[in-house]
Image (cartoon, rainbow, N blue to C red):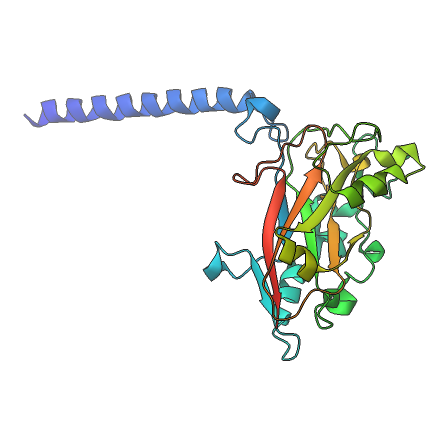
Length: 277
């Protein structure tokens, strides 16, 4: 009886060892078909799709994960949560040496000087006007900055609104006028950005805004190809004179021919609220 049990045990040991070996071999073959830097499924063939979303920072505390409200009082310094969040978000922009590759392949880009080879474009926070760490992003002065970024989609190239005769009907009038005043045709290759109050009262309470360093995401940052050290372009929205003690509903949109807006699904746009006591 003991001899039979030993044979059965040996059979199962060998069987499972062979099964494990076969599984490991198949897994090795599978991984050899993958490129760890380039996704197999891209754009419309991927789960992410080809319509980038728009995100904002700073985000509310994690315990309010579903909230989109930026609410603070400048008088008692409780704005520091929000400025600390921005410090953390911008850490790799402030210290590019901590990026993969140590920032060695970064270069200053422009519309007529795009990155080549393994180069990536820097994002210079010194060009963000009042929206920089040394000013605490103007939160103490009740003129807060909110940063916008497009979600990264591998190999996505924007189709720009660079023809002033064919701007979309729903594009805000002030943005249309801004685009029509552009004289440098290269600068037209930009994913434009607009921020507006969602309702008439919000429009009035939001007041004027400025965009830094440009009113959109320059085309030389696209496409994202997962190169080491890549940094997403940013737009800082500076709220010059927002109403105090009032909840302001704000919607920001990114504009390109291949960015489609859907308020319900927040495609191509982002909503947040601002309240300063």
